[in-house]
Length: 164
Image (cartoon, rainbow, N blue to C red):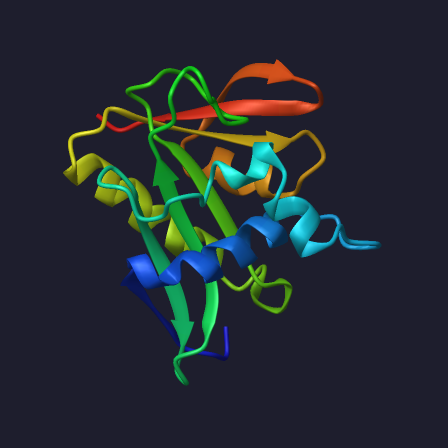
């Protein structure tokens, strides 16, 4: 990697950038991307950022040497009545991660993921969950970092990481 970057805790003022990262995550395939407003007004995506930052929310943002945001990883506790794609149970935070395309495959996502997993463990969580589409190359990252597939729904895998 030629560029240096650092990781900082996400704050309440990062809500808009986290929205950008939800859009990146939803449009991971490239090609003809869905519009930002279409994704962020969709109930299935809105739950990941609506009301950011709630007391149980936590996350981190990667920034380059110039202070420009590159990506983010965060988790939310979602209720059974409004579950996310990777919902396991109410006591298991669901992880969301997004990295700007130019920074993918440069270690940004892995660094963010590791930092968030460590933080979740420090906060006393026993597991983290996520959802990833079957053909998303990020599945390899999640597997290499200890996530295992626990379920399959509509072309997506639910993956869980035990934080013992």
